[in-house]
Amino acid sequence: MDNNDILIRLRYALDIKDQDMIEIFKLGGVDMTKEEVQKVLTKSDSEDEEYDDEAYEDEDHIKCTNSMLESFLNGFITFKRGPQPSKPGQPNKPDRSIKNYSSVNNVMLKKVKIALKLTNEDVIDILDAADVKITKGELSGLLRKEGHKNYRQFGDQYARNFLKGLTIKYRG
Image (cartoon, rainbow, N blue to C red):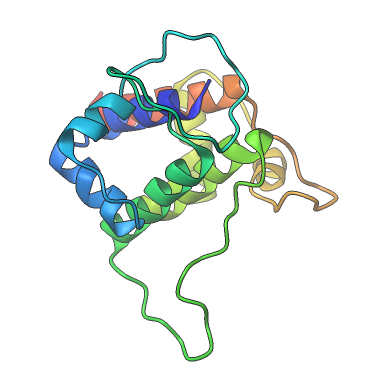
């Protein structure tokens, strides 16, 4: 599952309109036109699974890089919860959480959880709606920082089921 697919599924699950997508990207620090957003929300014809941070575009598709996805997720938090007041001595821009392709799903889970004000029980219920059973301990491992001894990778299948569960909860 690539970054474009995550955006497509997230947009569908939460019924986010084009204008809201543009606003969310803007809040995350990425200026996009409606046409660019629509090109990001298309599936790529290539089967290239490697998702580095190199952007490419053709006439019908723009590849969503890790930094674009993270900017969208940060903007989504601001869109849903409002801007966070800055504290003196605190940097304005958040650190990049997506270090490599393997951490994309974990970061997506954390940031969607924050944006939608979901509790751990809510996340477990969302996964349960998609017929995935997970314990609080397993969820805790998924929400850890990469490098922590109890960190667990949130695989593509779990991510698909999480987004499917969101669809059931918000559109069902």
